[in-house]
Length: 168
Image 1 (cartoon, one colour):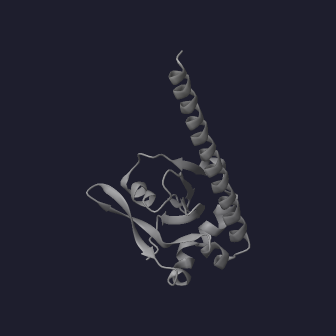
Image 2 (cartoon, rainbow, N blue to C red):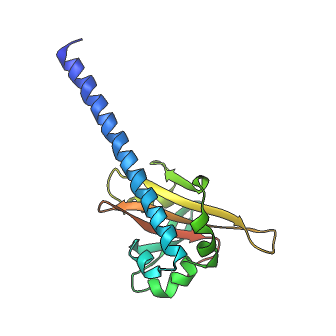
Image 3 (cartoon, rainbow, N blue to C red):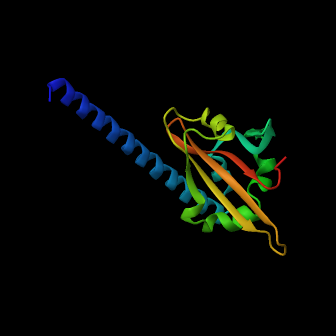
């Protein structure tokens, strides 16, 4: 093999290993933020949770031409007013006990909702979703909520929420 080909193979391998290492760091940072969120919810530290959020913070999905997109953003000033709807009793009860199955990486080529949120994040970083579906007490109905985490300026933050019931 020529020296140029060996160099290209080595460079390609190093680039691949670097991407994998970056992905592992992203996942580790995301998981630390999830643990922090769980701890803050357990002690009802909503001011601390607010410091983990990126504003504008999107609170719903809307549909347009069979595509969903993030909508109903709230500002940091509006957070105290909408906090009880975002961090409602179901979120407070269920989020601290979430399982591994409720965490997922959001693939790069995905729907419009996540593509729009990705525009807020650091280039090349991963996004993650925490999604919980659960039975509504006393009924046969199901409910759900989701939080999306994105890396902004090198730190994973909560960037969006949606649930069965609107925040606004």
